[in-house]
Amino acid sequence: MSRACTAAGEEASTHRIDVLMVSTSYPTSFSDWRGIFIRNLAFSLARRRDLDLQIWAPPGDIPKNVAYAPTSRERRWLAELMSSGGIAHLFRSGGLRSLWAPIRLLSLLRKAYGRTSTDIYHVNWLQNALSIPGDGRPLLATVLGTDLQLLKLPMVRSLLRRSFKHRRVAICPNADWMVPILNDAFGDIAKVCFVPFGIEPSWYEMHRSISRTVDKDWLCVTRLTRDKIGTLFEWGAPFFSGAKRSLHLFGPMQEEMPLPDWVHYHGPVTPEVLRDEWFPRVHGLITLSQHSEGRPQVMLEAMAAGLPIIASDLPAHVDIIQHGLNGMICKGPAEVGTALETLEDGMVNRRMGEQGRAWVSREIGTWDDCAGRYANLYHELLCESRI
Image (cartoon, rainbow, N blue to C red; front, side, top):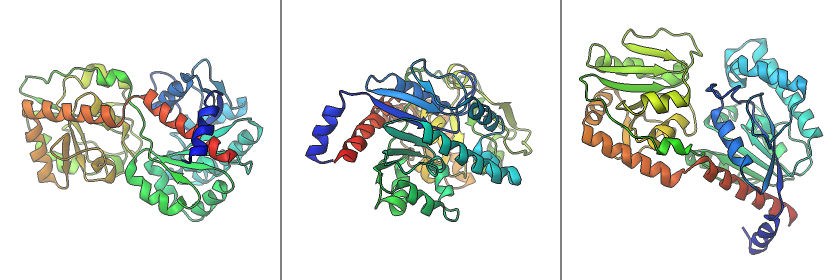
């Protein structure tokens, strides 16, 4: 950023910035697991004294000082969208509804953008930027791993480039491995900045007490789809079936699939239950997902709580796990067995867990830290818009 822009940004920081944040996911209540990271972000942005926040999202618990932007009609439609599993789930399910829902979403968003007065747009997920009006207002777009699949669809990249033209744009993936891909697509017309999400402080404060019983407990926390489960059942069978260790699986069943009899399935779970009842006593988290994603939030929360992680060899996992230091990356079933045995040694487990906690504390921080990173970009984009 130039010296002139820095000075202007310092002057602008004495004025409150009006931010419209858009999301198609938001938890309906504090016991809802869906879209929790959006609620955490909204509450952290609402605590800042330099921002006035409006939010266009499904109905749920929002901070008292945040304006809820949807009309009653939009609110009903967004609530139905959440109850149907969200826009990505509808799109994957196929059929006429999978085609109609994105069109309806873009239509509602165009009306919402058109009637809302704001200084800057903060859009979560790239598809929600397709309806941005040509008003020149700055745009910050939060990007997750699923957005990269969107870019593979015909015309989407061209349509997004048209939305980004004639305004200042910051494209903010939540994982740095996505930066080169997004730079190739939009680097000539937008600034691509890695902005990690935050972690609630209570995760850092958690104390573990690994069970001294014969059985060894491991957790997998995920939406149940074939890509998210990945090779877990196939590679895990020799080490959990009939062994003196248990795999406890948590998450909503979004695709019908048979579960092996050695899996203890508990259904959806809240972060509070994981933090208070499970994370303190299990040996670690395991995910053998093949799903394209940015930085899985549950993995970061587990690391903040001091749990080591066993994970498949995906960019999203390699991005946060240093093999043998704060967890284990596995490329085949034999490596899963080696990782389980290694991390069932109490001293090794505690050492890797604490190294993971230190890394997350240093590199990620809290949701208030995340809100500060976004606020700095708001000021920068507005400053550059004035030059």
